[in-house]
Image (cartoon, rainbow, N blue to C red):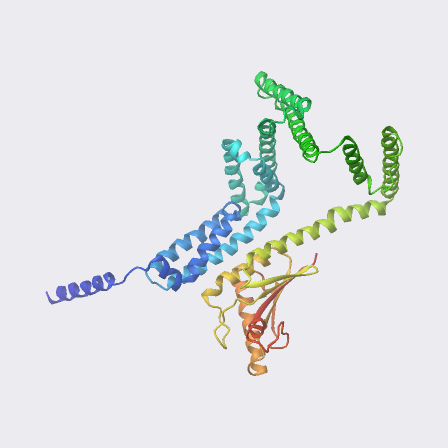
Length: 468
């Protein structure tokens, strides 16, 4: 009997203790467990970058970790931080998987973007959803390591998105012509460009007649629709010029001088001396001859260049390698710049390398441990490094001039080492790609004489070294 009473008392204490453990509201949770909120933000950013499509399994695990972290943190359970950290790790895996998928699916993703740009996802929503489902199956194959099977499916996906783009463009062309004609009528330009507007309407009607006769004959309809759009746009431009003349009270002589000025502007790269003292027919004929002579000369030079193997190789390198690599690097640097706020880091291109000067780390005074508030910043660094999968990474720590020089060297190296370790363990960046070093106060980027300058000098720099 006594044993039963004790059990009842213990159970009552447990129930009483649980009932007084209040759940944290959203504001309190965000303040006490910032890493959980950071994970939420990162999930949103990465979904915007379509990691849920390119690495569905890893992204789903990260999302599940977030929900577990919220559940624990709302109960003020410190394990919420552990689940948040696991979520960041899964996102790092998802980003790596996504980079692999982007590499393999480069042509498919480009075709998909073109289809979206043509509004295929809206105009042909059912067909587009089918293609998206097939693409998800393809990225799942890649994520699971079934690369060869995925490669066999690539051509089908490419054709699907290219077909969607083509169909959407055909529809869009007809609609664009209709909009252009309606705009012309709203502007009431029938009296300003009647002949050209009539041609636009005739071509548009022909496009409709073709579709009425055969809905599948979109090729012919598109030809007429494009002509209609062109004439409608031309009619609007003619109307603009006429309105300009009328509003400026141009005389007939002013109109001819304006016309000659337009010709002079057009041919200014060829000549500044146009013979307007000759009949208009002779002026046009002379300019035409000059342009044709220039074209013939350029064609001859091009043929001469292409006749040699060196010329062909130079053209190939310039068009396919040098320009492409430079443009790719510029785009990646621009993307990396968007990852960081001004209070977190500055991003600098150094020839083929990229320097991330991170001054947003909040290390405790005299310590090197990475706190949970820094997880978001380090994960952004990981995402930046993952843009260059073949790069080397040099992490360097720096301090201001306050304190013992030797201790500053040791502290800056310890902080650099901790960041490097995080890149390896969480970001899955191989150790043989990462080096770290500490410089103490030796490499200031600002004047240590001011508080702001010292704050700028306390930093961790991540140099991404590329071999392009």
